Length: 187
Image (cartoon, rainbow, N blue to C red):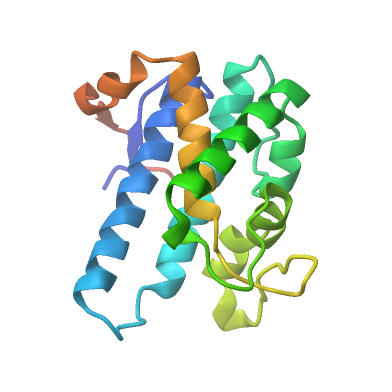
């Protein structure tokens, strides 16, 4: 049986954005399921992993839109954020503050929601969330807290900046039709 592969130009910002929004949708579906089924903790780690990968993809998209080239196979979101130009970092940080001030219910008591704390906590979530059963521990912020608190708001801030740079993408994502091709079997 052949493998199925997506045929698209590699490392293009729009393709990265499509993937980022798809993982956002997955994350939202998990949150909605959890809200309908309080007490069901089965999807905690899948939520954390989806959110972490979504954050990573939004950062890589913005790096590409800003003329940079994100490192391949790097899931460390703090490092990705630091590779953004200072002006981009400042805009994202400003949008994050807007997001948090307009949704105070999203701020969890006792957990820092500044951008550096969110990035510190999110730094290794993509890997640790997939391999927690092997003993990997998620990153902690400077206060010693391990949580995904604030990551969703940071993703919204990154998305706002991306759409500010590429407003046509807001409607373009819904119109995407994936093209798949069947490849010959590998030997």
